[in-house]
Length: 247
Image (cartoon, rainbow, N blue to C red; front, top):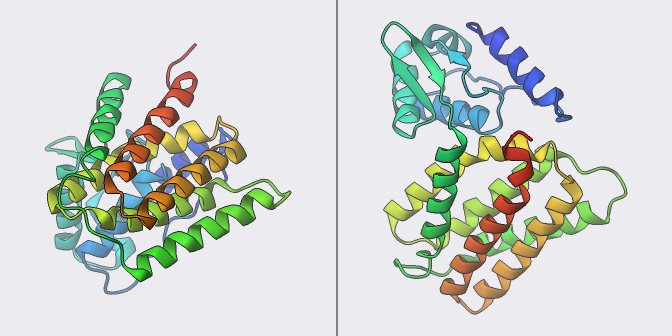
C-alpha cells in the first residue's frame, strides 16, 4: 500500500487477523530529528505496524513528523543499513522481507553471539539497571497471577525493557550493536508467531529466563548469563517451529 493510511490498515489487518490487538502508531511531535524518526519507524517495523513488504514514502513521513526530508532520509538510511528497509531507485522504500532460511540463520547467529556475552569485556550492571530488571520481574509476577488474559503489547514491552537493561552487561560496543540489530530483525517475526501461541505460557517461559538471568547476575557469572540467553532463544525457536512453516 502506498499511503500512510494504507500502511496502517495493512498493519491492522495483519495483526487483527491473528488475534492481536492493533497498536496505534506512536504520535509524532513537532521538532523531532532524525533519531526520533528512526526510533519510531524502527519500533513500528519491529511490532509489524509496518509489515514486511509495506511501502514507505519520505514525503508522508516528513509530513507526519513535521520535519524536512533530510532527517527522514537519514533515518531511512540507518534502517537500510540495519536491513529493515530497502531503498531502490524507481521502486521506492519497502520494509524488507526475510525468508525462512535467512531467519534460521539469523537466529543461529543470535545464539552464537549470546555465548560471547561473558567473554568480551562484560561488566556488572548498575543499581538502576538492576532495579529495572526487578521491576520487570515484579510486573511479570502480577501478570501471571491475574485472571485476565495477558496483553501481547505489554508482554512485548516487558521483553524490550528487560533486554535493553540486560544488554548493558555487554562491554564490547560492536557486540552490543550487532545484538540489538539482530533482535529487531527477528522481533517482527516473533510478534507474528506470538499471535498463534499460548501467550500466558510464553510469559511463563520468559519469567523463567528472567529468574535464571538474575541469579547469574547476582554473582556476576556472565558466562552463565550468555548461556541462559542462548538456551532460551533455542527453546523459543523450537516452540515456534510449528508457526513458522506452513503445514
